Length: 199
Image (cartoon, rainbow, N blue to C red; front, side, top):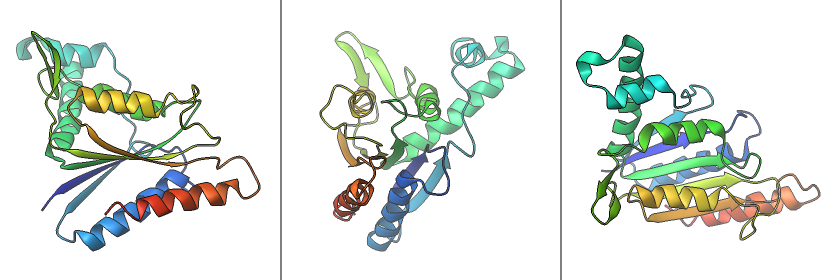
């Protein structure tokens, strides 16, 4: 049995392309792996605060020196990190906002990229501690960005996943969904066809 952690980040609930892809993923995965545990964390419904002084204090100060706000920030970071540590499969659903990821997803990453927990510093540089996990990134993009200099989404997510030791990462892009005509249908159908091969 595997644990699957799904991170939703689209500000939309209705008409969200990335959420459509997530629902297809869940349906397929449950059919192929009925014993697996699937956990969904929706960052639009329950946003994670941006990294601030309270979170830094929670990480860095000895327990007896932490304020109540710092302790609460640490507890939240621990909850999010524990979910990630427990996951065998990570699924991030990420629309492209202004050529990059939603700020809600960035805030989540800022809570779980933690020295000594998900990566460590060594004499030869940083080393990821989340080896052996798989990741899938399901994106929705208004234009066509794959391989272009405008894509600050896939390169960034590949880098942060590799940084924590997750190198088995599959990206599925629904591209051109705001271009009008039949671009949206083609982009979504292409993504769904690729997704059908995943489970």
